[in-house]
Length: 231
Image 1 (cartoon, rainbow, N blue to C red):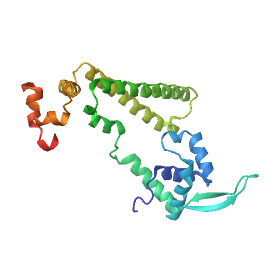
Image 2 (tube, one colour):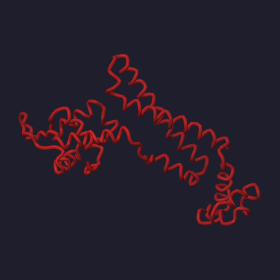
Image 3 (cartoon, rainbow, N blue to C red):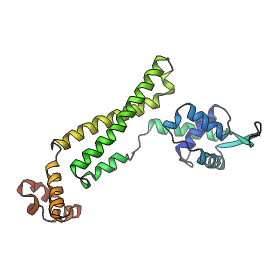
Image 4 (tube, one colour):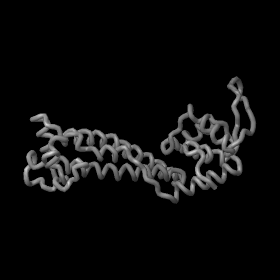
């Protein structure tokens, strides 16, 4: 089966929800939020209808009936089709079994970290750590509560995965901050000196790299190995 005509993760959640029973879009949204699935998959009620429409266009879901509750507007109840079940199963197998390259925003920022002064980098990383560590504390308390109530882990293992990622990020960033602050990070001495030259003499890093020996001396001869096009 060709994969994938609809690639929005919310579409995957819609198919998963309709695999249980027919629902109208609003019910799908409230069910995902009630189960905490909006912590793993971005649930935007405004885009939910367009996602359902796309799934219907490709034959993965179909309208079952139109219902009205009290004075509320009519709502269309959808059910998953046979091809929708196949799509969901293939998609689930791909997500669970096939690693994919994720581009983390922090990774992109670290790629250009020297664009900040070392002190500013430490300040921002510590600011990030406050938010990350607060989320770790909150999620840990939630998990302890669910364990105490014997709520089956199978229904919140995605939250455990999120917590594991946060703990790994926290440990790494704590170490990185310490290495920057103590100048034990490889290249930190060059980083600080480059910013000192820039702030003192107004010479940009690009200009400094054109003649590294002039600005950094013999102790930074490793810079000579950097290809000119990479400077």
